[in-house]
Length: 158
Image 1 (cartoon, rainbow, N blue to C red):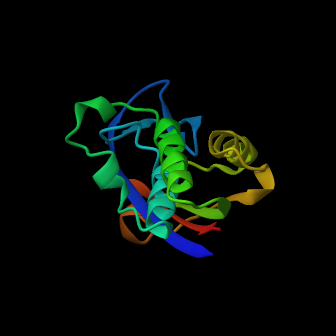
Image 2: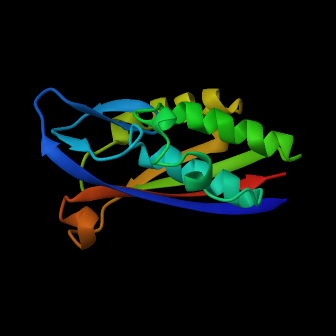
């Protein structure tokens, strides 16, 4: 068995009306954009990084460079599928994942089950094998000041 830890963070940009941001593969109404090369899904990016790390396959930046135009505005669930293919090719099988969103806003509690189902479908695992939760920083740090959001993920591979 192998474990991997992933982390990702993105800053918020301009305020936009009727806007959504992608978190855990789900579009969530939010009044600011996320500044990123791809769709800026910190939850899926942290999960990808954890998967790659557990299999000793480097990090997300090595596989999906922000200098590569092929990944501009990319759907992070596509990246997740590629990561699953890479760990499978390396002889590993997905075990489970635990992901934490770190942000004052947006609140995600009503979207968590959809996130779990969406990521499980992309991975090809059971929903029970994916945990998603969120925490605030009680107003501390860049997340607490509302400047951006971050996520951490831990995975187990067999």
